[in-house]
Length: 266
Image 1 (cartoon, rainbow, N blue to C red):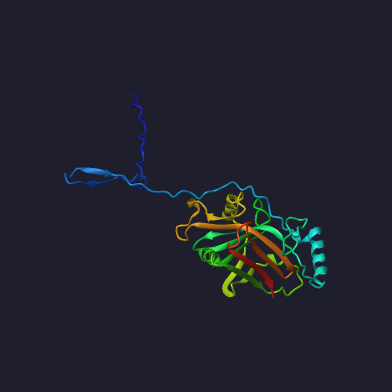
Image 2: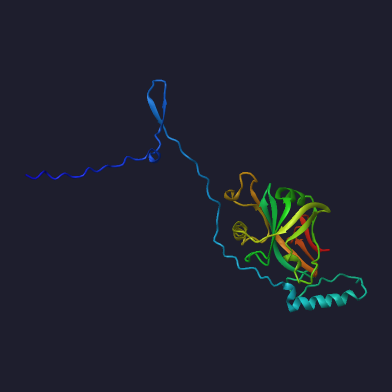
């Protein structure tokens, strides 16, 4: 007689203690009845992000345009003439709306940064382009904005001339010694625009002249809110070893903040 078929015993592994969910916390009230305490975790909202639609920066300087070359030649010729003061003042209007009293071109400049962190200075050909020059200056953003409210401010960035015969534009130098109103403040560093920088430029692409604070989602818990100041600058190329950026005040405003930025190779 054959023995009955015996099936092998299947062993079901018990769940590992490390994989078990933690039991709810129990606390006893005055009547000794246990109550369940549910713990929750708070999450911070992600920073505000915008799709980047800025056009790439044009690395070729406007100084190379034929109209600006002709303008500089005529200016050098007229400088050799004696100065004649007319008896009446006649307003002069140039044919190019982007050529101004210093003989430069108009660009967009933006100062931005968290109040307790270092300020950033970005220059764009227009608000719809990526910055062609982005600097990080060793000055707190809040302090610079406070000083600009008191009057004229001058920022000088100096570096040494290249020892070799390499043709390097002055705005392509990687680091400068920084002076603010004649006082040495540290260094200014040129850097590439990060995703956060482009996000700020994208948020301000429809702004031409303004001062304000960006949304709270972009604030930093340690360095404070993200402030900005945007206006037009006049870019003047003196030589291969000097460039100057003058802040241009909007029409009708005569007592606003003033800022001049000088790049010099010595």
